[in-house]
Image (cartoon, rainbow, N blue to C red; front, side, top):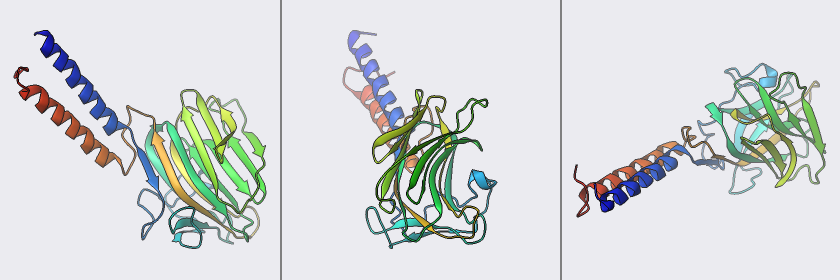
Length: 258
């Protein structure tokens, strides 16, 4: 094999690897602009209320044009006066994921319910960014079973405004951010498998709603399946890149035909 053939072989390997990265990592978003809630989401009991189990709670989950962070719609989770009153949307990735995951959340002026953006791992709490009227906190559940739950409280103006809630999760741990500023971290949380939006009425027969919009998840897992629904498109893109690379290598004048 001459130097030119070796060079083309290395380029081919690089193109194949590039195609694989495109196919195996990606970003998903949901701006809730459809005619119905995406099948990506499932209405199930939040883990704290006996979940994860199949079946919706006493509250409701609906698309609405009442408020929107962008576009014309968001998803409204309406708590019920029937205890515990929760409404929830959940996605189980089925594998341990790492990356950056976020959503915009807004409370309603009449709401006395609690609302949260939460990460779990196969039935184990990891972290939750919560709002209750004018109070904000991050609940952290260290991976070490000997460590107790740790609550980090922080303040913010405009409880009925849109706020960006974000978790960044990787080998260095988890960082929770609120409106772009880090508010808490936990080094023992290095992956997650479930994401959840929820609202609940607490221990009294009250009601309220929370609005969620512009969800985004960018996976950092090169070795994991691309998250839905972008996986199909990205996998096709990766395959096209590999086929193109192989045809270029095989038929380029002077190249190897074996």
